[in-house]
Length: 491
Ligand code: FRU
Image 1: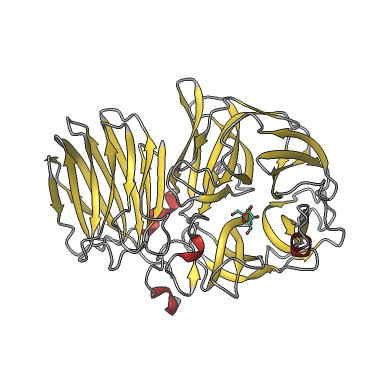
Image 2 (image 1 turned 180 degrees about the vertical axis):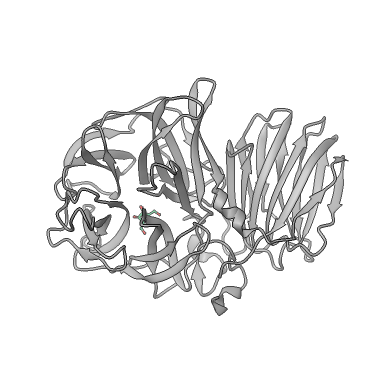
């Protein structure tokens, strides 16, 4: 248990660095029973600076152990975002088949070039580990992908492509992605470009991820391309869009050019998935950075800045003939439920405001599962409140056909004019609407109808949010079930 994890706004079951600045999750790879999480890290300040890869390890996706810094900046530049893989066949020659190397693939950002006013400041490098990710050796032949004369040329994400027996790298290049292939992770060939006529282009495309996923209930496999964009998110600033489509080892062809979002909240950016999760498990597990470049560097935490989202399982579901992406909390998180804390609230008709008695349960660190049967109410939901009359409202507007998280009056917001507002997600609910919510001191993650829609938002209430109310405006709604669990702290 770390003593300093009791500061105001410190998440109690999310991953956050002990001190210093953190942004994107990087290099997530599973190997020998361990989930590795690397991250963009600047240990010397609480704002962005010379980027390192911080490191943490978990065996269960719930408890994390902080590790020494994995990668330091060097003469080729800062270490920007990227991915990691297990090189099972030792294609790189850095290890052996008995001891396959872990390979990290990352962007070098050269500040000298940037300072000289030139745009071609990014190249791609690799490093390997032969001791289960504990120490890393940078490849002497770096960079492995030179800059072709492009600005914003970064965030390589690599996957082994079974059919062509090659490594595939997806790389962000301004507001497009480039695909490369390789036999040994050291030499890369350009394959194709994707994106000029698809998706949202309100900002730079960053941190892509490409992987196959089976469409649930079918034997069809689709490729998913995650593409983070900043700015240009649905509620402002940074956000994560996705495409589904086909990929033959050379080109990606999208099912639709429409923009679709992984998460409509303002605080889930740069999210990508774990590599090498065993086939028997079969999950694609996602984690994101729980902040937004609009205000990430000025949020009111003192020793550290930012946390990651909870890990989520991504699935593809058929929605009117189109594969669509859902995210749900990984089931390992059930281990956080505090024994004996479960509260079940009686079903009831809500037509104004109902206060819910949760007894001793600490709402500021909890999981809520509830279901409404839509009535004639225009909008309904829950609100979290404290003794300072601050509140965070989460609900559904049947009138507007949208979900919302309202943090306009949820606490401190004077640090940024961009912060206090209402995030919405278009949604056509059926007769029932189901919410699954994780609250952790200064964040809320809202999963609706088994992850069909997700909203992740942070907030900074002056005192803990410890009271729960139900509300319905302009009519009535039926609460059919409500279960609350207090959650354990992991630090
Ligand atoms: C996304 C990002 C990446 C980059 C990293 C730098 O948040 O801008 O594109 O690699 O952060 O820290």
